[in-house]
Image 1 (tube, helix red, strand yellow):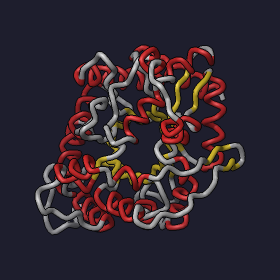
Image 2 (cartoon, rainbow, N blue to C red):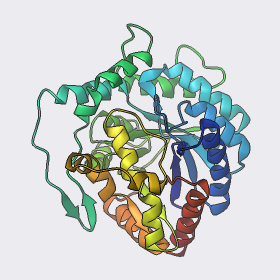
Image 3 (cartoon, rainbow, N blue to C red):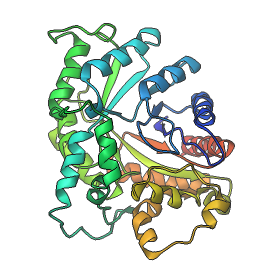
Image 4 (cartoon, one colour):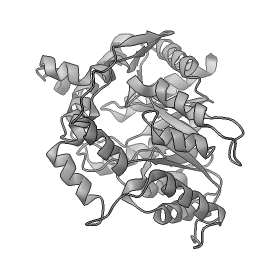
Length: 365
Protein backbone atom coordinates (compact mmCIF):
# COMPACT_ATOMS: atom_id res chain seq x y z
CA UNK A 1 0.00 0.00 0.00
CA UNK A 2 1.21 3.51 -0.77
CA UNK A 3 0.02 4.93 2.56
CA UNK A 4 2.25 5.25 5.60
CA UNK A 5 1.84 6.73 9.08
CA UNK A 6 3.55 9.55 10.95
CA UNK A 7 2.92 9.42 14.70
CA UNK A 8 3.80 12.09 17.26
CA UNK A 9 2.77 9.91 20.21
CA UNK A 10 0.21 12.56 21.25
CA UNK A 11 -0.67 12.83 24.92
CA UNK A 12 -4.43 13.38 25.38
CA UNK A 13 -5.83 15.71 27.98
CA UNK A 14 -6.25 13.70 31.17
CA UNK A 15 -3.59 11.26 30.00
CA UNK A 16 0.11 10.70 30.56
CA UNK A 17 3.21 10.11 28.44
CA UNK A 18 2.97 6.44 29.37
CA UNK A 19 -0.58 6.34 27.96
CA UNK A 20 0.63 7.96 24.74
CA UNK A 21 3.51 5.52 24.30
CA UNK A 22 1.30 2.49 24.92
CA UNK A 23 -1.13 3.91 22.35
CA UNK A 24 1.70 4.34 19.84
CA UNK A 25 2.82 0.74 20.18
CA UNK A 26 -0.75 -0.48 19.86
CA UNK A 27 -1.37 1.70 16.79
CA UNK A 28 1.83 0.39 15.16
CA UNK A 29 0.60 -3.19 15.61
CA UNK A 30 -2.78 -2.24 14.14
CA UNK A 31 -1.16 -0.35 11.26
CA UNK A 32 0.80 -3.46 10.35
CA UNK A 33 -2.46 -5.43 10.30
CA UNK A 34 -4.17 -2.75 8.17
CA UNK A 35 -1.36 -2.94 5.60
CA UNK A 36 0.37 0.43 5.98
CA UNK A 37 3.87 0.49 4.50
CA UNK A 38 5.80 2.49 7.11
CA UNK A 39 5.36 3.71 10.66
CA UNK A 40 7.41 6.82 11.43
CA UNK A 41 7.71 8.74 14.67
CA UNK A 42 8.65 12.41 15.01
CA UNK A 43 11.13 14.20 17.24
CA UNK A 44 9.69 16.96 19.44
CA UNK A 45 11.01 18.52 22.63
CA UNK A 46 9.50 20.55 25.50
CA UNK A 47 5.97 19.81 24.30
CA UNK A 48 3.45 18.98 27.07
CA UNK A 49 1.30 17.04 24.60
CA UNK A 50 3.88 15.04 22.63
CA UNK A 51 5.79 12.00 23.94
CA UNK A 52 8.05 11.33 20.93
CA UNK A 53 11.17 13.10 22.19
CA UNK A 54 13.64 10.25 21.52
CA UNK A 55 12.87 8.62 18.15
CA UNK A 56 15.51 5.89 18.27
CA UNK A 57 14.29 4.63 21.64
CA UNK A 58 10.68 4.62 20.50
CA UNK A 59 11.54 3.00 17.17
CA UNK A 60 13.28 0.17 18.98
CA UNK A 61 10.17 -0.45 21.07
CA UNK A 62 7.93 -0.39 17.99
CA UNK A 63 10.22 -2.71 16.01
CA UNK A 64 10.11 -5.19 18.90
CA UNK A 65 6.30 -5.08 18.94
CA UNK A 66 5.83 -5.57 15.18
CA UNK A 67 7.07 -7.98 12.54
CA UNK A 68 6.91 -6.66 8.97
CA UNK A 69 6.06 -2.95 8.81
CA UNK A 70 8.98 -0.59 8.16
CA UNK A 71 9.72 1.62 11.18
CA UNK A 72 11.52 4.93 11.11
CA UNK A 73 12.00 8.55 12.07
CA UNK A 74 10.18 11.53 10.69
CA UNK A 75 12.64 12.99 11.49
CA UNK A 76 15.74 12.79 13.64
CA UNK A 77 16.92 16.39 14.07
CA UNK A 78 20.58 16.12 13.15
CA UNK A 79 21.47 19.52 14.57
CA UNK A 80 20.92 18.15 18.08
CA UNK A 81 23.41 15.26 17.89
CA UNK A 82 26.34 13.97 15.88
CA UNK A 83 26.15 11.82 12.75
CA UNK A 84 28.03 9.08 14.63
CA UNK A 85 25.52 8.93 17.48
CA UNK A 86 22.61 8.72 15.03
CA UNK A 87 24.23 5.92 13.01
CA UNK A 88 25.11 3.99 16.17
CA UNK A 89 21.54 4.27 17.52
CA UNK A 90 19.91 3.09 14.31
CA UNK A 91 22.63 0.53 13.68
CA UNK A 92 21.93 -0.98 17.08
CA UNK A 93 18.23 -1.38 16.27
CA UNK A 94 19.01 -2.73 12.79
CA UNK A 95 21.26 -5.37 14.34
CA UNK A 96 18.20 -6.88 16.00
CA UNK A 97 15.53 -6.01 13.37
CA UNK A 98 17.46 -5.92 10.07
CA UNK A 99 16.05 -4.52 6.87
CA UNK A 100 13.08 -2.71 8.40
CA UNK A 101 14.44 0.70 9.42
CA UNK A 102 14.09 4.12 7.82
CA UNK A 103 16.48 6.80 9.04
CA UNK A 104 14.62 10.01 8.28
CA UNK A 105 16.75 13.10 8.92
CA UNK A 106 15.80 16.76 9.26
CA UNK A 107 17.60 20.05 9.70
CA UNK A 108 17.19 21.92 12.96
CA UNK A 109 19.75 24.50 14.07
CA UNK A 110 20.52 25.90 10.61
CA UNK A 111 16.87 26.03 9.59
CA UNK A 112 16.02 27.87 12.81
CA UNK A 113 18.74 30.46 12.17
CA UNK A 114 17.53 31.06 8.61
CA UNK A 115 13.97 31.60 9.75
CA UNK A 116 15.08 33.99 12.47
CA UNK A 117 16.96 36.04 9.87
CA UNK A 118 13.77 36.41 7.84
CA UNK A 119 12.11 38.21 10.75
CA UNK A 120 14.40 41.18 10.13
CA UNK A 121 13.66 41.25 6.39
CA UNK A 122 9.89 40.74 6.04
CA UNK A 123 8.53 39.94 2.59
CA UNK A 124 5.04 39.98 1.18
CA UNK A 125 3.82 36.36 1.19
CA UNK A 126 2.19 34.89 -1.92
CA UNK A 127 -1.59 34.65 -1.96
CA UNK A 128 -3.59 31.49 -1.41
CA UNK A 129 -4.23 29.52 -4.59
CA UNK A 130 -5.63 26.22 -5.85
CA UNK A 131 -3.43 24.08 -8.09
CA UNK A 132 -5.37 21.44 -10.03
CA UNK A 133 -7.70 20.90 -7.09
CA UNK A 134 -5.08 21.13 -4.30
CA UNK A 135 -5.22 24.08 -1.91
CA UNK A 136 -1.88 25.88 -1.53
CA UNK A 137 -2.55 28.33 1.30
CA UNK A 138 -0.90 31.60 2.18
CA UNK A 139 2.31 30.62 4.03
CA UNK A 140 2.64 30.85 7.77
CA UNK A 141 5.50 33.07 8.94
CA UNK A 142 7.65 30.69 11.02
CA UNK A 143 10.25 33.42 11.64
CA UNK A 144 8.07 34.91 14.36
CA UNK A 145 7.86 31.56 16.11
CA UNK A 146 11.59 30.75 16.10
CA UNK A 147 12.42 34.15 17.61
CA UNK A 148 10.13 33.49 20.59
CA UNK A 149 12.34 33.97 23.71
CA UNK A 150 11.28 30.71 25.33
CA UNK A 151 11.97 28.72 22.18
CA UNK A 152 15.35 30.39 21.78
CA UNK A 153 16.18 29.28 25.33
CA UNK A 154 15.03 25.74 24.60
CA UNK A 155 17.33 25.66 21.57
CA UNK A 156 20.32 26.20 23.85
CA UNK A 157 19.30 23.20 25.95
CA UNK A 158 19.39 20.87 22.94
CA UNK A 159 23.13 21.30 22.40
CA UNK A 160 26.26 21.44 24.49
CA UNK A 161 27.25 24.99 25.56
CA UNK A 162 29.04 26.76 22.74
CA UNK A 163 28.29 24.03 20.20
CA UNK A 164 27.82 25.09 16.59
CA UNK A 165 25.65 23.12 14.18
CA UNK A 166 27.80 21.94 11.22
CA UNK A 167 26.71 22.30 7.63
CA UNK A 168 23.82 19.94 6.95
CA UNK A 169 25.27 18.55 3.71
CA UNK A 170 28.46 17.62 5.51
CA UNK A 171 26.52 15.92 8.27
CA UNK A 172 24.60 13.83 5.74
CA UNK A 173 27.84 12.87 4.01
CA UNK A 174 29.21 11.71 7.37
CA UNK A 175 26.07 9.62 8.03
CA UNK A 176 26.39 7.94 4.63
CA UNK A 177 30.12 7.37 5.08
CA UNK A 178 29.65 5.78 8.50
CA UNK A 179 27.00 3.48 7.04
CA UNK A 180 28.95 2.38 3.97
CA UNK A 181 32.30 2.05 5.77
CA UNK A 182 34.15 4.80 3.88
CA UNK A 183 34.57 7.05 6.91
CA UNK A 184 38.01 7.09 8.58
CA UNK A 185 36.34 5.90 11.79
CA UNK A 186 34.04 2.89 12.06
CA UNK A 187 30.61 2.89 13.71
CA UNK A 188 29.88 -0.32 15.63
CA UNK A 189 27.05 -1.11 15.42
CA UNK A 190 26.07 0.94 12.38
CA UNK A 191 28.56 0.26 9.61
CA UNK A 192 26.86 -1.89 6.99
CA UNK A 193 23.41 -1.47 8.56
CA UNK A 194 20.57 -2.05 6.12
CA UNK A 195 18.93 1.37 6.58
CA UNK A 196 16.98 3.52 4.15
CA UNK A 197 18.22 7.09 4.62
CA UNK A 198 15.60 9.77 3.98
CA UNK A 199 15.74 13.56 4.04
CA UNK A 200 12.71 15.51 5.25
CA UNK A 201 12.07 19.09 4.22
CA UNK A 202 9.47 21.85 4.29
CA UNK A 203 10.76 24.02 1.44
CA UNK A 204 12.91 24.04 -1.66
CA UNK A 205 15.99 24.86 0.41
CA UNK A 206 19.00 22.85 1.47
CA UNK A 207 17.15 19.72 2.59
CA UNK A 208 15.58 19.23 -0.83
CA UNK A 209 18.88 20.04 -2.55
CA UNK A 210 20.90 17.61 -0.43
CA UNK A 211 18.36 14.82 -0.87
CA UNK A 212 18.39 15.27 -4.63
CA UNK A 213 22.15 15.63 -5.04
CA UNK A 214 22.84 12.53 -2.90
CA UNK A 215 20.16 10.50 -4.66
CA UNK A 216 18.16 9.89 -1.48
CA UNK A 217 14.39 9.62 -1.05
CA UNK A 218 12.70 12.83 0.09
CA UNK A 219 9.70 13.54 2.35
CA UNK A 220 7.89 16.85 1.89
CA UNK A 221 5.62 18.33 4.56
CA UNK A 222 2.16 19.30 3.36
CA UNK A 223 0.86 18.90 6.90
CA UNK A 224 3.38 21.29 8.52
CA UNK A 225 4.10 23.70 5.68
CA UNK A 226 1.43 23.24 3.00
CA UNK A 227 2.27 26.51 1.25
CA UNK A 228 5.69 25.30 0.10
CA UNK A 229 5.10 21.62 -0.67
CA UNK A 230 5.20 22.06 -4.47
CA UNK A 231 8.35 24.16 -4.23
CA UNK A 232 9.97 21.45 -2.10
CA UNK A 233 9.24 18.51 -4.39
CA UNK A 234 10.17 20.49 -7.51
CA UNK A 235 13.53 21.52 -6.04
CA UNK A 236 14.24 17.92 -5.03
CA UNK A 237 13.46 16.54 -8.47
CA UNK A 238 15.52 19.22 -10.22
CA UNK A 239 18.53 18.45 -8.02
CA UNK A 240 18.22 14.66 -8.24
CA UNK A 241 21.18 12.57 -9.32
CA UNK A 242 20.96 8.75 -9.52
CA UNK A 243 22.73 6.88 -6.74
CA UNK A 244 23.24 3.39 -5.40
CA UNK A 245 20.09 3.98 -3.34
CA UNK A 246 17.81 5.29 -6.11
CA UNK A 247 17.80 5.36 -9.90
CA UNK A 248 15.13 8.08 -9.98
CA UNK A 249 13.46 10.48 -7.52
CA UNK A 250 11.23 9.06 -4.80
CA UNK A 251 8.90 11.34 -2.85
CA UNK A 252 6.58 10.87 0.10
CA UNK A 253 4.25 13.74 1.04
CA UNK A 254 2.63 14.14 4.46
CA UNK A 255 -0.95 15.13 5.28
CA UNK A 256 -3.20 15.52 8.33
CA UNK A 257 -6.41 13.48 8.19
CA UNK A 258 -9.29 12.37 10.37
CA UNK A 259 -11.76 9.77 9.11
CA UNK A 260 -15.06 8.50 10.51
CA UNK A 261 -18.10 6.69 9.13
CA UNK A 262 -19.92 10.00 8.64
CA UNK A 263 -18.67 13.53 8.05
CA UNK A 264 -20.28 15.04 11.15
CA UNK A 265 -18.51 12.57 13.43
CA UNK A 266 -15.20 13.13 11.68
CA UNK A 267 -15.50 16.90 12.11
CA UNK A 268 -16.34 16.45 15.79
CA UNK A 269 -13.29 14.25 16.31
CA UNK A 270 -11.09 16.76 14.45
CA UNK A 271 -12.50 19.83 16.21
CA UNK A 272 -9.71 20.09 18.85
CA UNK A 273 -7.03 20.24 16.14
CA UNK A 274 -7.14 24.01 15.70
CA UNK A 275 -6.66 24.66 19.41
CA UNK A 276 -3.77 22.18 19.44
CA UNK A 277 -2.06 23.93 16.48
CA UNK A 278 -2.60 27.27 18.21
CA UNK A 279 -0.69 26.03 21.23
CA UNK A 280 2.29 25.20 19.00
CA UNK A 281 2.26 28.44 17.06
CA UNK A 282 2.02 30.67 20.11
CA UNK A 283 5.30 29.19 21.34
CA UNK A 284 3.79 27.27 24.26
CA UNK A 285 4.51 23.87 22.74
CA UNK A 286 1.92 21.31 21.72
CA UNK A 287 -0.67 21.05 24.47
CA UNK A 288 -2.24 17.79 25.61
CA UNK A 289 -4.77 17.07 22.89
CA UNK A 290 -8.15 18.38 24.07
CA UNK A 291 -11.52 16.69 23.97
CA UNK A 292 -14.06 18.16 21.55
CA UNK A 293 -15.90 19.65 24.54
CA UNK A 294 -12.71 21.30 25.83
CA UNK A 295 -11.99 22.71 22.40
CA UNK A 296 -15.53 24.05 22.04
CA UNK A 297 -15.09 26.03 25.26
CA UNK A 298 -12.23 28.08 23.80
CA UNK A 299 -13.10 31.64 22.75
CA UNK A 300 -11.48 32.30 19.40
CA UNK A 301 -10.16 35.68 18.32
CA UNK A 302 -9.56 36.78 14.74
CA UNK A 303 -5.83 36.55 15.45
CA UNK A 304 -6.24 32.96 16.66
CA UNK A 305 -8.08 31.97 13.51
CA UNK A 306 -5.46 33.55 11.27
CA UNK A 307 -2.72 31.77 13.20
CA UNK A 308 -4.05 28.31 12.35
CA UNK A 309 -5.93 28.93 9.10
CA UNK A 310 -3.49 27.23 6.75
CA UNK A 311 -3.40 24.07 8.87
CA UNK A 312 -7.17 23.85 9.30
CA UNK A 313 -7.86 24.50 5.62
CA UNK A 314 -5.48 21.71 4.57
CA UNK A 315 -6.55 19.06 7.08
CA UNK A 316 -8.48 16.27 5.34
CA UNK A 317 -11.57 15.47 7.40
CA UNK A 318 -14.60 13.40 6.43
CA UNK A 319 -15.83 9.99 5.41
CA UNK A 320 -13.39 7.36 4.13
CA UNK A 321 -14.31 8.11 0.53
CA UNK A 322 -14.03 11.88 0.96
CA UNK A 323 -10.61 11.74 2.58
CA UNK A 324 -9.26 9.14 0.16
CA UNK A 325 -10.35 11.35 -2.74
CA UNK A 326 -8.60 14.42 -1.30
CA UNK A 327 -5.46 12.41 -0.59
CA UNK A 328 -5.51 11.20 -4.18
CA UNK A 329 -5.55 14.83 -5.34
CA UNK A 330 -2.53 15.51 -3.12
CA UNK A 331 -0.76 12.48 -4.57
CA UNK A 332 -1.57 13.47 -8.14
CA UNK A 333 -0.63 17.15 -7.88
CA UNK A 334 2.64 16.56 -6.02
CA UNK A 335 3.50 13.40 -7.95
CA UNK A 336 4.08 11.62 -4.63
CA UNK A 337 5.08 7.96 -4.67
CA UNK A 338 3.66 7.56 -1.16
CA UNK A 339 1.59 9.57 1.30
CA UNK A 340 2.44 9.86 4.99
CA UNK A 341 -0.72 10.36 7.05
CA UNK A 342 -0.83 11.79 10.55
CA UNK A 343 -4.04 11.54 12.56
CA UNK A 344 -4.62 12.91 16.06
CA UNK A 345 -7.81 12.48 18.05
CA UNK A 346 -8.38 12.63 21.77
CA UNK A 347 -9.49 9.01 22.12
CA UNK A 348 -7.12 6.31 20.96
CA UNK A 349 -9.87 4.05 19.61
CA UNK A 350 -11.06 6.84 17.31
CA UNK A 351 -7.55 7.26 15.94
CA UNK A 352 -7.16 3.55 15.28
CA UNK A 353 -10.55 3.43 13.59
CA UNK A 354 -9.68 6.44 11.43
CA UNK A 355 -6.60 4.68 10.08
CA UNK A 356 -8.53 1.45 9.55
CA UNK A 357 -11.29 3.16 7.57
CA UNK A 358 -8.78 5.07 5.48
CA UNK A 359 -6.80 1.94 4.64
CA UNK A 360 -9.97 0.15 3.52
CA UNK A 361 -11.05 3.09 1.33
CA UNK A 362 -7.59 3.60 -0.16
CA UNK A 363 -7.22 -0.05 -1.08
CA UNK A 364 -10.56 0.05 -2.90
CA UNK A 365 -9.41 2.88 -5.17
